[in-house]
Length: 392
Ligand code: HEM
Image (cartoon, rainbow, N blue to C red; front, side, top):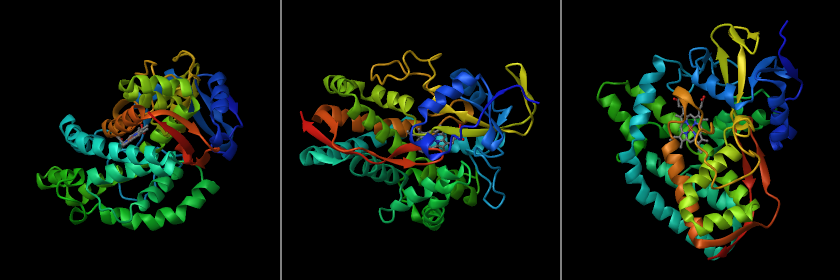
């Protein structure tokens, strides 16, 4: 019988997803490892164990799926997120190549122009929805443009990724609600991953160049474009949205950013720490693991709370405080170790440019109605956030 502390709190219950931070505090206090009874799984919520678990890919594997359930054998074999070395390396190497500093440099000008255009238009309006008009609209324009995806039908990207991120959690009503729209969007997504559907000068086509060079098959290339379309949009949208909410709720912090727009990059990073868009992922133990004087059995699901690690007082001074000047290096909002986010350079670029432009053009930002929360088994974010801005 395990001696680990256990809890009956369901981390995927509506009320916990709506405000998970009190539950995270309870989880951290339970100890370095604890059991979640409703799912009969193990979990970690402290920074030290979360970070070391993410780095120990031999013991805590991703190849059995990074969700609660095992891998669906009916789905094509993944090439990045849910695969272990040595097979993980090939897909990762090719994706990473398309995210080089040279690519970022080329994207910067286009992304910058769109940030100027978008913020200019919103400042003129004065009141707007910071989710639909900015945090959703901006990434949904610049990111698929960069990959080389056509304009028409982009709302499918949201339906698809909402479903995929929900499916890492349990079979609850949140997953059920997103299933039909997600499965309907799936065909659009797969069609967009085809070579013929991608703009020849986009990042998607760079993946097919690896097929031309014989590194991967044409079929594998299709499945390497897909992770971009799954993982690249909703994550960034909620990273931006959560940071905008933190700024609108902390006027002094926005004032600092306005005074010093060069803080924008750090402010985005602090937003990812303070209210992480990706809250959790699972791992599976490849063997029996001795931890904190007890044993996690082999082939067991372990829930890793990244968003809780980012609020752990053992790692961060006053973690509940949103502080745009905080040294934030080491947060695990992009994960850690060999699966750490391959797209972080693009996400950071988007965050930096939007916040820089906002900081320059706007003196203050305030909520004018209660924001509406979106519930997802993995992602944390909002549906809507009505705000008013005052031009600088
Ligand atoms: C992996 C978060 C943006 C593509 C990850 C992981 C996290 C994460 C936590 C680690 C998963 C794990 O350890 O199991 C985020 C956040 C983003 C973001 C918070 C935005 C703020 C992006 C973008 C792209 C992307 C823009 C595409 C360009 C990926 C891929 C992986 C990944 C392909 C899997 C990497 C691997 O398994 O080696 N992301 N991500 N992400 N992300 Fe992101």
